[in-house]
Amino acid sequence: MSTPSAPALFQTTPVLLIAVLGVLLGCIMDAMVKTLGLAYGVVLIATTRYVFGSLFAGIAVLATRARFPDASGLKRHALRSIAIAICSVLFFNCLTILPIAEATVLIFCAPLMIAPLARWILGEKIRPAAMIALAVGFVGVLITVQGAEDGVENVRRMEGIASGVAAAFLYALSMVLLRQLARHDDVVTTAFLSNLFPAIYLLPFAIALGMAPALPDLPLFALTGLTGFVMWFMLTTAYSRAQAQNVAAAEYSALIWSALLGYFFFAEIPRWQVWAGAGVVVAAVMMSAWDARQRRARGIAD
Image (cartoon, rainbow, N blue to C red; front, side, top):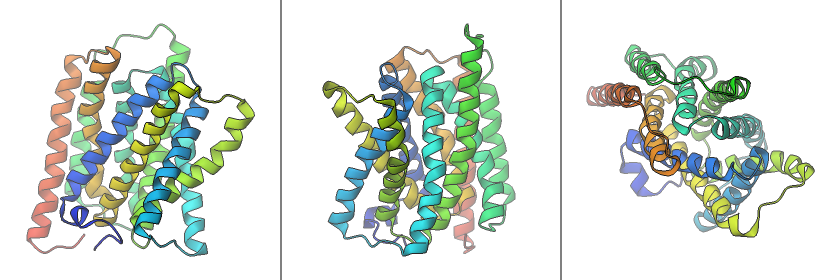
């Protein structure tokens, strides 16, 4: 199935590669959010991320003359965006509390939830190979969390963990709904609406809190919005070209990116368990890619 209005490059690039690159951009955005979290509240960060994302996505809509869905389609985007907005605030809160690699581990619960949610919402058949790949990836997650030192502020740490788990569920839900929307709607428009509606929802809360970004920090806020838009565009393209469970294993590659970003930008030295878990995660991604390639070779449609 071709993706409406997506550039030809994205039509010929392997789906899993697009998804992995999209996840990488998401990790870069997370690092910027963690940096901003040292001085700003998560509601303001989430709001400005979607405001700037809407601006960049709007430019793309005008440039490509992308078409908009009808009223019922807009309603579906609006409902999905509720999950996106709440997920962002919760995960940004998790990022400000926990190390970036640990926060990423928590969001890894999301791929485990995607296949069952896709079965329930989309009626997709759960393939054994996809479930095995996800299970292997989860083993990598379990290896990663071993050996961590107990936090000093246990209550604050529990808040971060709870925020991360709740964000994982909402992220999985938004990804499954994205697959449903991407079957019919333009990719650029979907990315635009995925920024616009959360911005509309969060802006009143940001205004009520009465805090605005400092002028010197605006470029970083803007870059966060741009990175978030490109990330959603790539993930929208990936999920429109393959079943949700086929793309889900690519989410685990975030462990590698977040560990590297945490090391270079926040002096968070990954434990050996992180790297061991990363190896298992890579194996899970390769397993999913191999199964998808074998199915295509046999002419089995997703």
